[in-house]
Amino acid sequence: RMAKLFRAVIMGPPGSGKGTIAHRIARTFGLEYLSSGHFLRHSVAAKHREAGVLVKPYVDRGILVPDDVVTRLMLARLEQLGAHSWLLDGFPRTLAQAQALNRLVQLDLAIILNVPYSTLVDRLSNRWMHPPSGRVYNMGFNPPRVQGKDDVTGEPLVQHEDDKPEALMARLRHYKDVAKPVMDLYKSQGILHSFSGTDTDRIWPYISSLLVTKMHTQPSESFQTD
Ligand SMILES: Nc1nc2c(ncn2[C@@H]2O[C@H](COP(=O)(O)OP(=O)(O)O)[C@@H](O)[C@H]2O)c(=O)[nH]1
Ligand SMILES: Nc1ncnc2c1ncn2[C@@H]1O[C@H](COP(=O)(O)OP(=O)(O)O)[C@@H](O)[C@H]1O
Image (cartoon, rainbow, N blue to C red; front, side, top):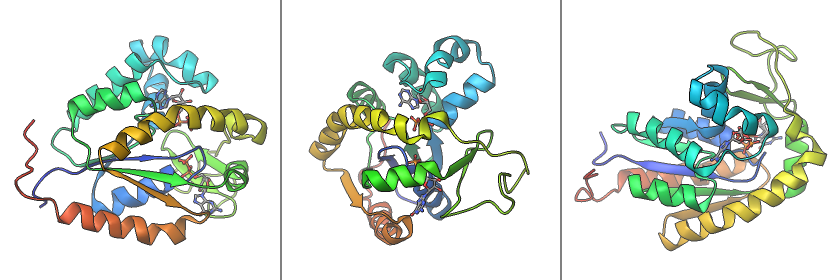
């Protein structure tokens, strides 16, 4: 059992491998994994009253849900995870969201993935998903056993409209503008660790050893007080 709860976020442009690496981290280190995209799509699909009205129009267009809405929904979900160590993917995305999160918990680590644009384009053009489970495949990197079918349910895999190259440039520019102040904040907090590369399997050992260090050398006096 760890002396204190461990809380981390993973950030990076679309296609940088956040979901892939977050799943590996959650599985390897026993952290609860919470993807804001998956959570929001799920809440829309589940027709939660508030989510349907306040979230659907944005998710359907691939534009960010207003800060106050996504923050309220995500922080409520994090309150439920209060007794767990967790890893966040896709939240916070804006400075306002990061400041709201800082008011709730003290983060231990922010992992930033830096992947070249051409690699993002290539990966996203081959990305296939099973939205109900959030499982992600790639024709080159981790293909499904049966082409176009989810390994577990056999249900059809889909591609996202905004994974197309023409949509990616705009998403990437927006990501850079919005993520920069968040990274500056985490740098000032001394918790920012960035990893560059074009191959998840090559950067994984570095991320894994950072987590081993961070999770097992927490000073015991920093018990989570809240
Ligand atoms: N070729 C290749 N594809 C990868 C690698 N890492 C992840 N992928 C795939 O690239 C796509 C983007 O990864 P994902 O984890 O969804 O990125 P996210 O958008 O940052 O969450 C998915 O189809 C992954 O399966 C890699 O090292 N090489
Ligand atoms: N932190 C966030 N703030 C605002 N909206 C978000 C956030 N995370 C996810 N969303 C919404 O959920 C949708 C799906 O998110 P995600 O699966 O991460 O896809 P993308 O990589 O296209 O942003 C986004 O297009 C956006 O509408």
